[in-house]
Amino acid sequence: MIEIHNLSKKYGTFHALKDISLHIEKGTVFGFVGPNGAGKSTTMSILATLMLPTSGVAKVGGYDVTQHPKEVRKRIGYMPDFFGVYDQLKSTEYLHFYGASYGIPRAEREQLIPQLLELVNLSDKADTYVDSLSRGMKQRLCLARCLVHDPDVLILDEPASGLDPRARIEMREILKELKLMGKTIIISSHILPELAEMVDEIGVIEHGEMVAQGKVADIQSRLRVKKVIHIRTLEREEELAEKLRDELHVTSVLTDNTGVHVHYSGDDVQQSALLRQVVSWEIPIVSFQEAQSNLEDVFLEITKGGPRE
Amino acid sequence: MNWSKALINPVIDKEFRLRMRSKRSMLSVLLYVLALGAIAMGFIYLFLYLGQRGPQRFDPQMSQMMFYVLSFAQLVLIAFMAPALTAGVISSEREKQTLSMLLTTQQSSATIVLSKLVSALSFMALIVLATLPVYSIVFLYGGISPKQLVSVFIFYLFVMLLLGSLGVMFSTLFKRTIVAIIVTYGAGLIIFLVTGLLYLFFMGIEQRNMYQSGQPIVPGSYSWVGYLLGLNPAGAMMSLFNPSFSEQVFMLRGGSLNSKAPIELWLEFFIVYSVVIVLALWVAIRNIRPVARRKRKVKISAQPPQGQETAGNEV
Ligand SMILES: Nc1ncnc2c1ncn2[C@@H]1O[C@H](COP(=O)(O)OP(=O)(O)OP(=O)(O)O)[C@@H](O)[C@H]1O
Ligand SMILES: [Mg+2]
Image 1 (cartoon, rainbow over the protein chains, first blue to last red):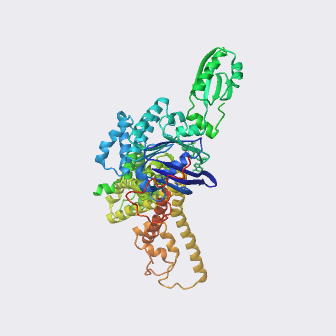
Image 2 (tube, protein in one colour):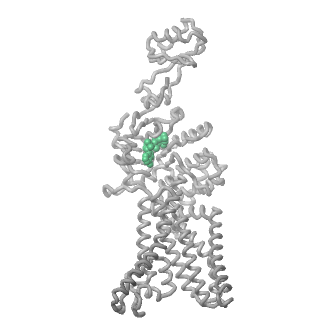
Image 3 (cartoon, rainbow over the protein chains, first blue to last red):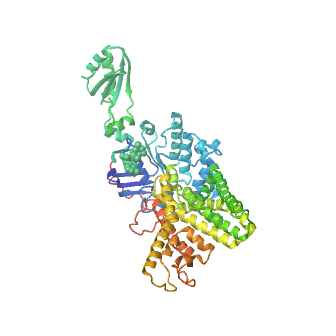
């Protein structure tokens, strides 16, 4: 559905995108992650026909974004990272405007708009002026706006930024629903655990380069993100750490005020043996817990964005 | 396609709604009419009560004079209003961060630019029409034909279109509304003031040259300097009021009154600035979206090829 080949973008002399290639199948939810200034928004604007690439090709549904922008626009719903609303319009009028701008006849819109408002849980705000909506509501309204012309592809640039935890969950629920509707979604975010449960694939971009791309699980294993076992003791933490360093499959041991962190590469059988071993040392252990290695770890691992230890 | 659908596209519809809902718009109509009304009252007061020969009668000649004064005053008001109303149409959407979403819709660049211009022009036309009651004073005393009034209003529309097109163009060229407005005022200043000053300047030089050379004037000759005044809205409007004005302008001192003007000033104004308008709008439409050079003419097939290239993706 989305094909990007050797896409480059220069702002003056600054190379914002360097030979990005990407292929997203129909119906896939693709998470686009990367630190600030990596080039996520740039890529998305190019896909949304708002910006020309310096070189390379980007296609949506088989149409080149620079050669057939109008065809591309028909097929995409784009939500920018920062967007405004027309203050003096009511929610329904707002959606009517965009619906009409996509050439949807009025009669059809009359039917469609209540459904869209229902989908984003804004039915009770149908006649409210847009500027009196809260930020989260505006964000959901904008999402409804992306859907007026029933696009195959959704390009969502940080749709959950600036939302409170509750609104984030709501946004995630809506996106799940859209995924069920079979939309191809490309979504960028900084908050990776949030993406983890809904994306099929991730692409990690840094300094304009695609650092890693593929299924979430593949990436995790490719990077051999180790298990981290977290052990909390009542006392003798240092002694425990010392002893653990000599155990098999333990790659490194770190201690901090929350306890001992063991980077472990063994499988579950070996891990249970380790637990027995640790207990046999008769150090008062409070908990022995396998920390979930999540996308956050993957992210930091790949981008070396900051010290994790 | 029915006509109302063709005429009222979504962008125009939205612009009208937004404009008519803001209190500021209504306030500006009010202020504008009051300003022109004040000028009319001031005129009457000045000429009728402060005249040197004491209070005078308001006769047709006086009312014609007043019509001219009102028309020029209105022209100046338009020069101030048009840039403010049009130079923000694109850049303000950019500042409010609504432009990118508008640009991803199916509306063509031309539709967006022209709709915004038309809606701003309609609003200005509304304001100018709202000043008609002020003109009723003129009509009460005669001296002006309705035809003159209509031609002046059409002239206003053209000036608004000119300043509006420049405003919209600068609105697409500059990211910030305030810059676009200032530059548009600058362009307005050139059109309204600089052309007039240049005319006076070169006229002075021409006349001096003529005196010094002392050659007899060839009947029927005219000076190129007159063309300069044709670029000035005030000059063009004057020629609308007074058909012989164009001849006088092109004539050098002492020329015969029979010599015909090479072109009516208002016609020159209209022709020259039509080109400017078309160019400005073309630039605006080109600028609003990035346009790629078409590599080849490909007919868009209904079923585009998909998923041909799965290889070459880095995973
Ligand atoms: N209009 C522009 N002119 C010049 N440089 C730009 C422009 N837009 C973006 N850049 C630069 O391009 C790089 C990529 O920007 P981009 O907005 O794509 O990053 P991003 O991944 O979306 O970051 P964030 O997570 O902060 O949204 C940045 O270094 C930025 O400074
Ligand atoms: Mg961004």
